[in-house]
Each structure stands twice: as structure tokens, then as C-alpha cells.
Length: 130
View 1 (cartoon, rainbow, N blue to C red):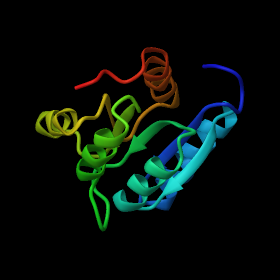
View 2: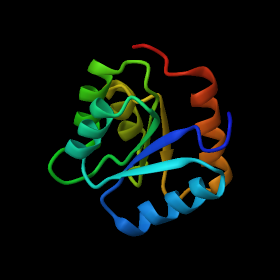
View 3: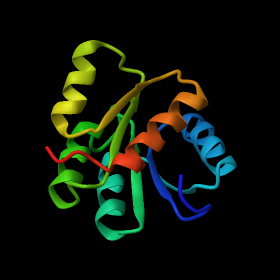
């Protein structure tokens, strides 16, 4: 997954316990982690910080949901990979995530190995322009 400490991941997650779980997994694997508590802050971080390499985006968040945030991020940074990580596990939800510009989809609860594998694929392949 590249040199340790070189990959920065934005975790857009309003539930602090979910953020802590993902942060723990990622920091154990030498990722830099930035936290956004809502979709609006996620957009702000992505537009202001070109060092962000990947976004893990919750869908249901206050102020701006993850689908709206992903659309805005992709308008400005189309090559930035965004993975929806959500407890909304219906087929229609994954379709909406992909339609909004997400590059991958992971439903909660998830296994750490699956999260890391999907992240590795996104970072290796880069985002697919839509």
C-alpha cells in the first residue's frame, strides 16, 4: 500500500465509535487519518487538502449526507477514490452510492481485512472517472 505514513485517508463519519474503529484499523497499518464529522466538513477537507488519497464516506450524516458530499468532491477531484462505508446495506443504497460517484461500497459491520483489501484496490487502481 505504498510507503508507510504516506497515504492519507479522510474518514467521514458522524458516529464517533465507528470513526474510532476505522481509525484504529488504519493507524495500525500506517495510514494517516483525518476525521470529518459530517458531509460538509468532508467536502471542505477534500478541497483544501490535496494530500488526501482516499475517502471513507458514511452515507447518513448531519448537515450534508455522504451522497451529496461525494458528488461535490468528485466535481473538483474526480480521481480521488471514495468508498461508501455505511449501515445502509440494501441493493438500492449501493446503487445510489455508485450513482453519486462512489468508487466502491462496504456495508457495516465489516471485517478489517475486507476494508483494507478494498482500500488497497482503490489506491492501486485509482478512482474510475465517471
